[in-house]
Image (cartoon, rainbow, N blue to C red; front, side, top):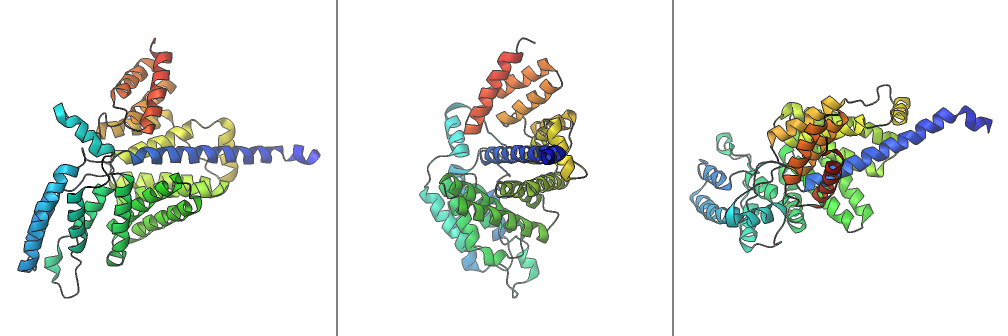
Length: 380
């Protein structure tokens, strides 16, 4: 008994550390699920891309004819399949008869589109990869433009679309061995496939794909540390692999997560998803109990810290960049105001969040919490 009494602080710290890591893992998993229902980046205008390709000086006449044909097919596909807006958090609105079609494009729909199949096959066949014989000036157009445009569209679609994006990227890996734009997309696509596999119950395969996704993001960073999306997906995947790692490694990953999200913001401050991700990290740290903070302090000289004002700033910035874009951000803005005891302001944001359409499982969870908080604070 004396041994346990003498070492009681140590046992308390270790236990609290486990609680801290569990909360961090839950937070990361929730964020990643939310990101699956939101757009990450603005789709390129495929028609303009094809026109640029037609202007490349060194293309032979037969290639120009093929690209012109692809132009018309991709244009037809893009009109049918184009997403509702730009950015990860875009939830488009429309009016009249088109509204249902817009939301179907944003959040699902048919897994098979014959026009898309034709266009994607030609995109893959006609990717222009520069060779040593090509003149440098004739290779101004990025060789992966068409592939990346197709992938960026597929990763925002159904599970089958995401698998197609993964297959497209895997098939071209040898041609983009030094391209960070390729590897962060491969990281994102591999992560998405890992989630699909995990939902099917194959934990070991999910683990493999998750670590692969983290490795691809790290490769993108090694190729170009100025790539904001490489930092973002390294942060997301380093958080995800914590599901399979020990307590101390999870806490270390938490610091890396914050570091790379902050770097992504420094490089691209206009991406709302990065501000949202950092806001969620800050909120979770702010809500840690005293014992959980003490546990973190026993493992690291500088435990994580965040203020509620700092947290609120990130959520408000995300909303500023994409006003009214997603329900969960409104909820967390309101929760920050509740912590500040600014209840009228909190209710205003809860009402705004209630008005955002509920289109996903996470939206439904946010809606339930919004309703609960409105009942509690609507009288203030």
